Length: 337
Ligand SMILES: Cc1cc2nc3c(=O)[nH]c(=O)nc-3n(C[C@H](O)[C@H](O)[C@H](O)COP(=O)(O)O)c2cc1C
Image 1 (cartoon, rainbow, N blue to C red):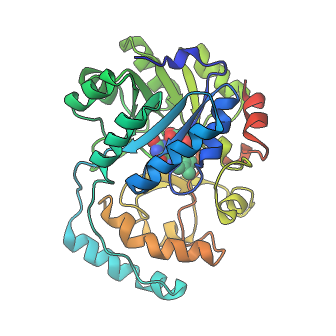
Image 2: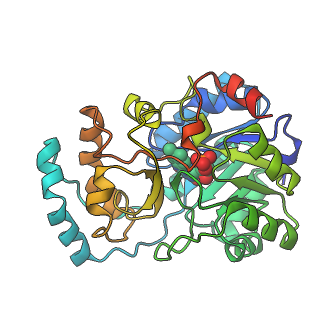
């Protein structure tokens, strides 16, 4: 491992947040403030991903992390997807947007891995899966520290056996997608505190803790429990440098939203977001199947956001969303350490 996450001036990582919130400015500001910023590779083309790394490099002299989705296979069933598309006809009509094509792709895995090998950010993290052992060996050779997102001790042990340097344990409190590796499995519910304890006892690699951490006390608690650093997403969604949409920002502060839930209705993979009308109406029928369901619902979600409506889109947020504060990354970071 070349870059040691235990060496950060501030043991706070600003989580990768694909789909808008992560910008080069957000990641760079996190690193400049003494923490570690991540670029989110998910959903981008390989070219866009490379452009963002270069842009962030120009904005900070600090370390940079990048995050990749590891999409190997899908559990989508064509008949279930067809049925779900019928269920979504009203949404399509309401927002004046056609449903998207429910297709599979691997998020340009090989091209993005090549970019990591070329541009060599200090850290690369993975979610939804772990690279092959040969790919881990290649990254190790390039001096890039590898972090695997895991949601159980068993996933953590498997990731370390594969060759990663660090695990990021993601508790069920976390906003956004659960990193659960089996796309057909129900997401585990073991609280972050227990998962952190189990992994720090069992493994001798650094452990990053993520999920529901919003305050200096939360950060201090996970550090005392043995975490090498705390990774926070929701706490930075309102940061000045974040690219969170105005609809996302407003919803996080809107008293009509009182809770978050885990749902597969937007992307076909379990993720936590503000409980809204779309979830209430479609969660029960929604099949698993990432990325097919993601592509199917994507135009409707985009149209809902364009219309300024938080009820037809995924408003990802962790359980602590009501504690998110506005301000620069530097200010939020200072309030956490
Ligand atoms: C809007 C949003 C987008 C996210 N996107 C990603 C992502 O692209 N890759 C990833 O590994 N994790 C992603 N996550 C999960 C974070 O890495 C982290 O586990 C989570 O934010 C921690 O919980 P918290 O939001 O309560 O702080 C996302 C989280 C949010 C809130």
